[in-house]
Length: 565
Image (cartoon, rainbow, N blue to C red):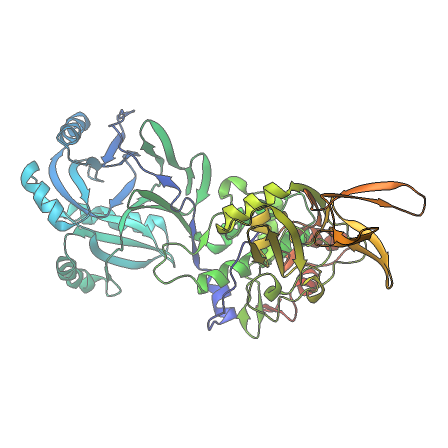
């Protein structure tokens, strides 16, 4: 399911984007793992190479292509693996980060680094008697159709003494030439390359990256003695922590955080999204609805990605669930193929095609859940006969006060009442806010934040308490949340109510109510934010024989499909 902050669309040509099928960058483990110092791991089989670069270690096969970006020193070269390992171990023992790289020519390069600055690398060079300082700058040759074409171009560069690496670009493949310590040095190389390859451009990375292309073999990242990330290449498929992915992986060191990004064609990305968002056993029309919604959502996010971001979407429900190659199923892949390149547009622009698991019976206007009113995200009722998920959660007054404190930092004291506000102003009856009133203060939470604060499946719910009292007044029967603040008239006159109140009804029976509630019962329907397509609702509509166009047109008001099909 999608967790989204609504963005305004930018200028876009629907047909052109749909036909080019761009690559998408998926943040798999962005900022999720802190790195710690590690010791040199065993090399394993003789064809493998051990990399130990400061806080992380990498074990790579001989046929892998690796480009470590940052500044580093080429200390020595050797054709013997054991000699190279001894050199790396000696550098590590001397306090220098170090790693070993096997070139396509069968020679092992021993590097000290990577370092954050060229100055740090230069200082280490004198200590390690390095022969050269390498850096992150290079020349990019784009426009190669396949990985094989990029690999064929790489070896001649190495034979000429210039490192080169295949790289997956937003459109097709390319070759990254050189590892220069300055932009000026790369610029000088650029002039020579452009004489043969006019499309070549200068390459200047941001941050300290570790970019890995693995045509065959395995890659593993170790943190301490624990294997954190591993990748194995098999027919263009890589594995990370046991999960296989298509495309390429880039590993970026951001301070002490490791960020892993999977880059692959958009349609292949959807192969891993649809079965992660919706059971592959569901009706084909429902799966096709999910494919079109997910494709549209992804393109919208790509168009509106934060400038300078290293990825377009999260590989989780922060964007939409993505299980990679490991999640792919024949039925869901068929749904992707059947709707290939089709997206939803509104006035010629791709829409923010958010969706949730279960609307609870009715979806909601976008501005009543988030902030922006979008014309295609209007509340609609589910079809007659739809049975939403129902749930009940019971919380004590103390638990609610603690949730408010953890969420907002506001201590309301002993909770006196929790009041749902604005339910009559929304399409589905979701509250616009909830007021928490306590003995020491109050706090109001708004819209979809209600779900986060109270940890609820959805915001479509009602509240009853153990202090609720139904009384009959001049205008009829009314249910009061509690008798707190009420007064009673007795023989001695009007006075405040005690801590508990006994009420006698027409039958003579008495019931005792606490003056303030100590228990709150939340009865709700649905699962998720409730905006856009309801996945359970889409399955119900598919079971009634509706097509994906009919399903999506029900949930997204006034949309068109591009290209026309």
